[in-house]
Amino acid sequence: MSSRTATPATRDEMIRDWGEMLTEHGEPLPDTSKMSTAEIRTGWQRASIQYAEPADMPTVYPCEGLKVLFDPDCW
Image (cartoon, rainbow, N blue to C red; front, side, top):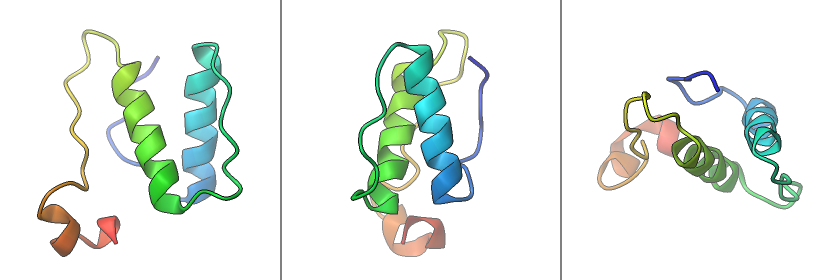
């Protein structure tokens, strides 16, 4: 698995990347048709943490705590 440093720009890119990651590990992608963009982003981020290679640097959720209030990417 390659390491990615930035969140994909669009909803479709997040769904595609999340699906590729889950498929690589033998899991199905949940139905994203009724999910919000934030829910998709959270699912993608958690999967990237769960399936990170040991050599990868640890990842933190970018939209937690007070950052949610100040960072437009979290709105």
